[in-house]
Every structure is written in structure tokens, then in C-alpha cells.
Image (cartoon, rainbow, N blue to C red; front, top):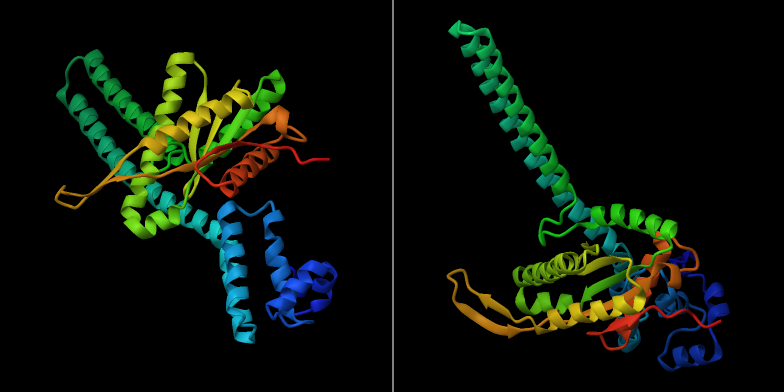
Length: 350
């Protein structure tokens, strides 16, 4: 946030205040030459800040509306709004930290279990070796027994190593690729697209009104919604691979947002495929059951908004950041245009 605004210096705000905007602030009673003017102007212009996601922009704009509606311009209210603004800005980082800590805890637990398995394997190998030596039998047979023991131990370690790598790249809730896997994949996909000059499309998919869905049905059902979207995306990727032998990489980007990269797919085709995904999710019927399995509610729906962008066509320079930013802008367009739709990136007019 602008330090002039935070410290209550109105001079910077005054220079940003157009005649129409200043007149509007006068009508709602915002004191002239006050820190409130700078704060409100800053928050009104938040839609132009590219580093914020769609939910953050919506929450900040709602905060502005609430301030103007209540017309409480006291110092206590100013501190309250500043605090709320900070919480909104830091929310994605807090969510990412929480998610990372949960993933780390799961990996630590798995690592501990792996160590215990290896300890048991070492003890078993020791017993086999001692028994083979003490048996006093044929040397070749004894060595064969020891070799088999070592091979079993090596195979177990290799399987566990592969499992640990897979866990570190998998979202524990939905079972699809996580953000870490996406970051690794997208850099390789962009480099390949630039080298081969073949298209690469990305679409960002966000569950509409997810917070309201959670509030209405509870976080357990909210988690189920995330699992369903993840399963549909995973099934879609597997189907494209099976039918057309093309690579589609679906991942959970964070929160209720998912990312899908489509190698050798242009924007128009990506839009068509994204529409298929949107339609599948829209048709899905949730059934809520109690712990005993009895149906409490049925026919519950969720919708998603999807933003699509193509690397070589939509980016000022072919980089990961520009591609993600273009897809995110397209997603914001889909959200701001009514949600439950697919929108492609639109270049700014010169």
C-alpha cells in the first residue's frame, strides 16, 4: 500500500482525484484533505493491480463500498480498514504457507514411516545374512541368498524414493498435480514451445462463489467440490492423452483455482476444450450425505469461470510470467462478465 496513504498524507491522493471522483467523494461525505481520500482512491483503483488475484480485487472493492455506505470516517474505522486491507493482501501468502506446511507434515510422516520400513528391511537382511553364513552350506547358494536380500532391500528403497517424489508433486486433497509440479512443468513447456515454435495454451479455472458455497454447505462439502473438479480435469487429461496422444497437464494452482496447460494446442481449440470442461462441471450433481450415508441434499451445483491464453500469440515476450498473467486476466474477464463462462485473453487496445 502507498505509504503516503497509510501515514495520512493527502497530497498524493489529491493529485489522483479527478473532478468527477472528487465530486462523488464530496457527496458521500468523505472529508476533504484527509487520509480517507487517499485510502479510498487507492482501493478504488485496485482492479488495475496485476499482482492481485480476482478474489482479492473483489474483496477490496467490497471493502470500499462498505466504507462509503456506512460513512464512518473515524480514526478507529480507518485503522480497522487498514487492517482488513492488509489481511486481504496477505491472504494468498497465508493460504500458500498453510498448504505448504500441510504438505510438509505429510511428507515428514511418510519419511518417518519409510525409515521404519527400511530399519525393518535392514534387520531382515542382517538375519538372512547371518543365517546363510551360519548354515555352513554351499558357498554359491549362500551368496545367492545374500544377493537376493540386498536386491529386495534396494528395490524397496527405490519404490519408496519414487513414492516420495510423487507425493511431493501431488495435491493431497484432489490427487492431481500440485502448484510445485505446475511450476516445474510450465517452465519446461514454455521452453519447448519457444524452441519448436509450436503453440502452448494455458487456462486458469476458478470455482465461482466458492466462499459462499463453503458457508452454505460446510468445508467438508467444499473439499468435495475441489475433489470433483480435480477428478474431472484429471479424467479430461487422460482422455485427451488416450484418444489423441497429446499432453494436457492439470494441476491445482491454489485454493479453488486450477491450471491446465495444453501442449501443441492453439487458443481457439483451447477455448473449445475449456468449454467442454466448464459444461461437465456445470452438469455435475452433488449429493450430501450424513455420516451414516443418508442423503441430506441432492442436486447441488457448482460452476466455474475459465480464462484462456496462448503463449506465442498473447504474450509480449514468451515467458512463464506473461502467459500466467494473460490467462489470469482472461479469468478476471470471465468473472467480471458474469461468471460460469470461458473467456480468452484480449490484448489491450493501443
